[in-house]
Length: 235
Ligand code: DC
Image 1 (cartoon, rainbow, N blue to C red):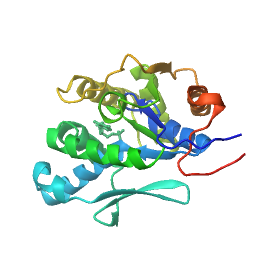
Image 2: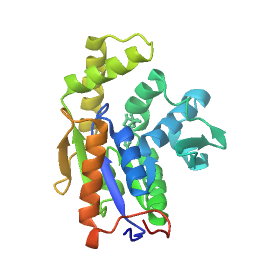
Image 3: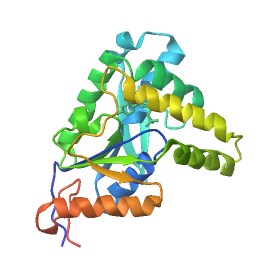
Image 4: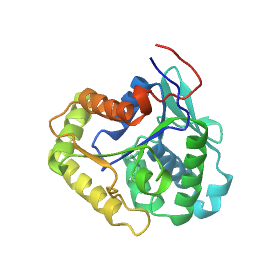
């Protein structure tokens, strides 16, 4: 029997390329919760900044960033434009990591927005600072990890399988650079909070990781209750 629990939150943090988004999406589907990709929000600010040249601390207050769930997938809108695909370029990844995720005012605004979303939904939220800053009250906190070589190998294979050029040593170098930035920036660095459960995904499939997190969520809620976003549901 599923018992609805509003205001349940699962925070998933971890380094680049560990499979957070795919895992979080699957966990959300398994538990009928809402998936929130916070990295996409930082990327949206990066896209606007690159397009307009406006300093992000000036534009951030006027940006309307919305996440919509359409046909089971998350879409991101910037000032009513669907930018879901536009934010997935190498240029945006690099610029976001170097210039946007390090901006204190941007972080403050986006964290507030993320907290508002979590107030009204049961969420699976992934990022770098979810356990430490955004949802320190989350009932379940997960830190996903894998060695940089493993993450770089997965990313290389992924690019090759999509017919894109990829060189393992270059991907590894990029992975190490982004790890260093994420973990050492002065504002909201990536950390594993003491109350987060550490999962090394090296020898696990995404499905296995997601099922493990879902089983933690179920045992966290009382009497086997399953958290879900809206008032529903018997199963
Ligand atoms: O997860 P991602 O690659 O889409 O994230 C894009 C960038 O944003 C990456 O440099 C890490 C940063 N980020 C962050 O600082 N805090 C978050 N909560 C999510 C992402």
